[in-house]
Image (cartoon, rainbow, N blue to C red; front, side):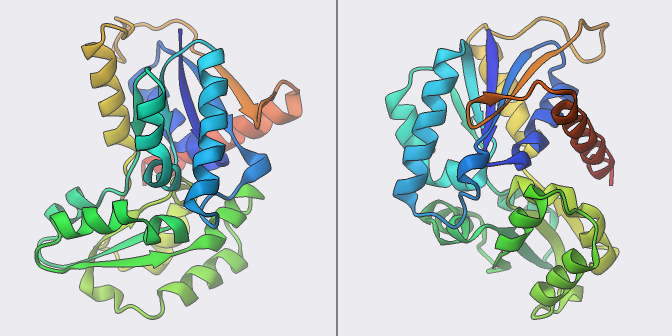
Length: 266
């Protein structure tokens, strides 16, 4: 059986990449809903409909669990999908709690899509963990657009981020939460702009740990561990239902994984 991982676009590869590191012997279906990207500028109702379509696809492709690798989709649709579908659904959310815990009293900046920033799920999370009122929220919609066209390092990207961050006294911040999986592609540019002691954090590793826990709890985990000799991992890639099979498409996927590995170790 497969593990389904999906996002509105290539941002969800962040979660797949982390899953391949931590759960290397599983089989995966990766689905980027590129026809409908970005989700972050849509209404909650629109996102719920789109996520429902993807979940139907995943159930038809023999998925034993699904990871919603999109903060926006998790915030808008995860609970609705859990009521409708019987397989485990693991969502991702901005890593606000660990960021507040690790900030040592300095401020925390949470960067996300406009819909994630607006949704009650994030607002309630901040209220629950931010007793000292350290958290600020920042919407960065254009980063998703840059990522989807493969523009990760450019003067335009750097200018956009410098302008977006110019309203903040960055020396007051200890943590930057990357609250959209697309944002992980830009860690190197964030690092150029942020003070050296600002730590970047995202929810990828925690989400895959939760996936592993759910698979163990439901006795669906492959017994092979990352430290052991592994078989070839099987991943099938889809763009809004169309499978990526051409050498050009798969070469681009490999390039994205290579970039994500560089960003992962930053």
